[in-house]
Structure formats: structure tokens, C-alpha cells
Amino acid sequence: MQYFSDAEITDLYETKVKLPDSYFEKYETVPAWPCTKFPMAWNTIDFPRVICVHDFKEWVEKYNLKNVESLGYTFETDPELEFVTPGRSRLMKYPGFDLHTIDRLVDEQFDFFVFNQTLEHLYNPFLAMESLFKIIKPGGYVFTSVPTLNIPHALPFHYNGFTPLGLGMLFKSVGFEVIEIGQWGNFDYIQKLWGTHGWPGYDQLQVDGKVSNERQNVCQCWILARKPVLV
Image (cartoon, rainbow, N blue to C red; front, side, top):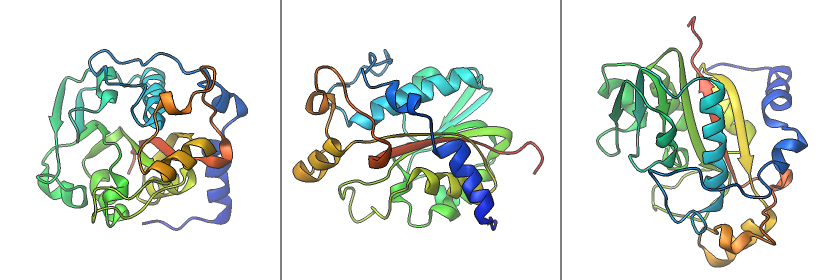
């Protein structure tokens, strides 16, 4: 793992985490659920995932990731997968594939690797991301989402959460370039999350068809990172 100066950390914050006001406003009036293969009950599903999928779809288009040669992924039900059409793909599901040791279990490299809502269940996320780094091709991408705060779940295997900057530093520390970081949260979601010990959906949060994204009340975040071409 690498050491970073305060200036380097501040630069990551200023360029990737401190998003403009327009980012927090763009999904306030919630757009339609974009998935057809994974229709889901999007109005009751944990709401941050709705915004995460919209960001993922936008980033896939922005960085030309739809038709990658090879894709690795950990959940066949991830709705994000609808927006990627790889030449070949490989499902690597836990417990058969543990991200802590995945470099020892896989004898190939991938152009794109997608895993979601997993980092909070890794007892050593730095070790796991170092292992993942080794199975990404130079120039290849990784996407993941993770709660910043959450109710205890999947016990006893629930260890942590990540702020947007913490998520960026995790990937940067093992050698990835941070390309994009997204986030969502609001105080109403936090109150309902802890008040009901359930994951609030759109139906519980909307007011006149709007759901605010509050910069200071982040609840979940997600990242698109890239392995440098020269490593």
C-alpha cells in the first residue's frame, strides 16, 4: 500500500468527492427505473441503489464500457449488469470466490469487474482490493457500491462502512486511479433506516415526487476506478 500526503488526499477530495451542486440536484425528481432485465420493485428497494444504478449507466456510456471484452462479477442479480454486454463473462460468487484471495483462485484478468454491497462484509478490505487489483488488466476498470452507514446485517460478517473519500483512498492505496465517485443520502432516510431497522425505498421517502440528496448526510457511495496502463 502507498503513502499519500495531505495535499494528495485534498486533491482527491476536491476533484472527485466535492461534487458540484448540480450532481445533488439531478436526481431529485427521480427518473424512471432504467432496468428491463431486472425490473425489481424499485419503488420499495433500498433507495440509494436506484441512484447508484443511474450513475453506473451514465459512467458506462461515458467511458465506453458497454462492450468490454471480459467482465468479472460477483452477483448475477446486480441490476448494473444490464448495461454491460461483454465478449465473455465470469461469475465469481462467494463463498467459492473470496475477494481476499481471488488472485489465487482466478487464472485470468478482466477488463471490467463489478461487485456491489460487499466491502462492508470484508474483514480486510485493503487485502481484498490488493488481490482484486492483480486480476484486472492494465487499463481495466472496477465498479462497486458500499454503505457509508447501515443497520447491522448478514451478521456476524458485517465490519465497516465507507465515506466517499474513504472509498476513494481505499482504491488509490492499492494502486487504482479514481475515475468517478458518486453518493446519495438524506436525513429522512437515516431516521427511517435506524427507526425501522429496514431499508427505506422511494415510497417511504418521496415528497411530491421528489427525494433530496443531501451533501452532508451521505448514506451510500460508489466508485469507478481504473488500473493504470503502466504498473
